Image (cartoon, rainbow, N blue to C red):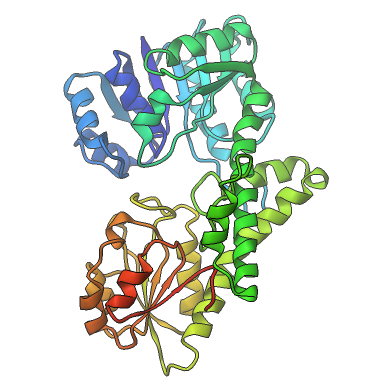
Amino acid sequence: MRLCVMGLGYIGLPTAVMFAKHGVQVHGVDVNEKVVNMLNNKELHIEEPGLPEMLAEVIDAGQFTVSTKPEKADAFIIAVPTPVNPDGSANVDYVRSATEMILPYIEKGNLVILESTVPPKTVENVMIPILEKSGLVIGEELYISHSPERVLPGRLFEELVSNDRIVGGINEKSSELTVQLYKRFVKGTIHTTDATTAEMVKLMENTYRDINIAFANELARIAEKLNFDVWEAIELANYHPRVNIHKPGPGVGGHCIAVDPYFIIDKAPEQSKLITLARSINSNTPKTVVKTIQNIVKEIEEPKIAVLGLAFKGNIDDMRESPSLEIIEELKKAGFKLSIHDPHVKADVEGKVDTVEEAAKDADLLVILTDHSAYKDLDFAAIKKVMKSPIVYDTRNLLDQEKVEQAGLHYLKIGSKL
C-alpha cells in the first residue's frame, strides 16, 4: 500500500508517521523546503509527544520519505491549512493547490481523501472540478472522500487511534475504501456519511465549543460586575447532569475553534446569528483582558508586564490564533514594557526570555495567559523577590491562590472580583 500525504504540519505529519508505522509505504510532501530538510534529518518543526521517536523509527525502516513533490500512490491524503481571510471568508487556496499538485500523479483506482477542515461543499465545488481534469470517471475510476481530523494536540497519537472517525465519501465505494485505509490503526468507530455532511460535522463540533466558551466568557464579565467567582459557579452548575459549561479565558485560539465558525458564517450568514455573536464575544475577549491589565496597573508609573504563555493552550508549542499574541500586541501599542516567557515555544518573539524569573525581574504584574503545567509549581517566593510590584493576574485559573498569596503576592483572576 502506497500513500502520499500532502502537508506535513500539526496533523499531516503525525498522520503520515502513524500510517508508516502500521505498514504503509508513505511519501510526505510539504512545499516548505526547510521543513522537508529538517524531516529528512529527523528533526522536527512541531512539538508532539512521541513524534521524534516515531519519526526516526519509520525513516530508518524506509517506510517514510519526504520531499517537496508528490509521487504516485494508491491513496492521497490532503492535510493542508485552511486559514480565514481578513474579511472572514474561508481561504481554500492550499486545498486547491494541493489537489492540483497531485493531478499528474493520479491513476485509475486511486483514492483521494481531504482531511483539512473546510467549508461545506469544498469537496464538491473545489476538489472534484480539479480532479475531473484527470480524465478518470469520478466515483468509478477515482474515489474521493472527506475525513476531518478530530484530535487534540499533545494527545494526538492516542486520539488518532481511539477517537471515532467520520468518513464522508462522494459515493459508497469511496467511503468503503477510506474506512479500509483508516482501519489500519483506528480502533474507534468509523461512521460513514456523505462528503458535505462530514464537512459540516467537524465545523459543528468546534462551533459548539466556541459558543459554549463565549457563554463562559460572558459569565466571567458578569461575575466581575456582580462580584462572584465564576469558576466556582460553573463548577457547581456543571454538577447538573445535563449542564456542561466550558471554561472562560483570555480568548479562543488554535486553528479549529477560533476559525471553523467562520466557515459556516461565510456560507450562511443570515442563518448564523448566534454563531456570529459568539465569535464576536470570543474574538473581543483579548481586548477585554488588555483593559483589565491596564486597570490593574493604572496607578503604577511606567509599569512593566511579565507575560507567561504564548501557545493557545497548555503544554504545546502551537501559537496559531493564540489570544496571547493579540494581547501582547495590544499591550505594546499601549506603550507597556513587556517581558515574555513560554517553556514550549521555540520561535523568536520580541521580548521573550529563557526563564520565568528573568521575565518577572522588575515586573509590576505577572500575567498567566497559557495553562502550561510548568507554571503551576513556580517558586512564587523567589518570584516575589525579583518583582517590583508583586501582583499576579491569572486568566486561566491555573494557580493555587492560597499558595501564591502565602508567598506574598496579590492574586487576581479573570471572572472574579478584581
